[in-house]
Image 1 (cartoon, rainbow, N blue to C red):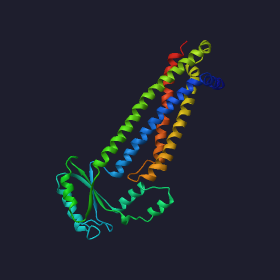
Image 2: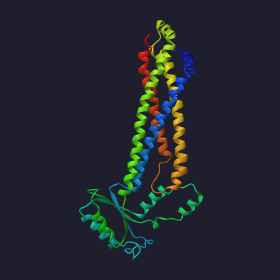
Image 3: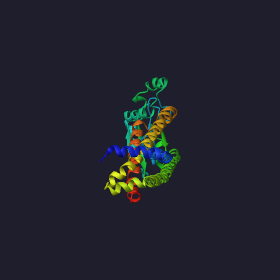
Length: 306
């Protein structure tokens, strides 16, 4: 197989169909970017659930040395007070299960959430220790609509600083995360279909422009793979360019939106990081290659018959 011919034909095809190549790159770029955003939104939803706990939970925060509520007159929650709280949780009909979170565990989660590049903020956060955290019980409910009874029972107990119900806070946040995630995925699906059609159209036009060369190659006994390789490389080049642009777009989003704004101005949950961005890029890179390779192999079998 003469690779020089393959590369020459690939270069010629790219120059001959510049507008079609640009259109293909733009379509793949936009669709892969939306897929990447959907993947990162899904990761963000997972991190939010890990930070806040299950949306059906209520959190019982115990007194610590900094508490000033009427039920925290003795400072840190004592062992007898904790035992009384667990007895209520074990016997209450609204409680499905519960987990105890220690100060060290709370501090580890806090450090993941409060990440800042600002030196002043870093100095302030460095003074916080695990002892400043609050021990807590994370309570899952049997019925998400029945929580007032256990909430009222726990809120009035000694050793309980406050009881937080995240359901009303999390509901709109998860709703809009879901809307954005599935909206991006839906639009990306239509654009992926458009990209596949664009690949087919590009192959059709390229095959028509080279119909004489293809006919001659058929007569001299060239294999289907040998004839198809220039077309496959053309679409792969467009795919690589689109994947590279998508990677730059996702990197810019993480650098400027996540690290530059969200992590600095909002500490209510853990945000996605570079590891999540690399994972999303790997997913869209694989999708981009499949998106161009498979349709090209299928279309060449149809359009290269002379």
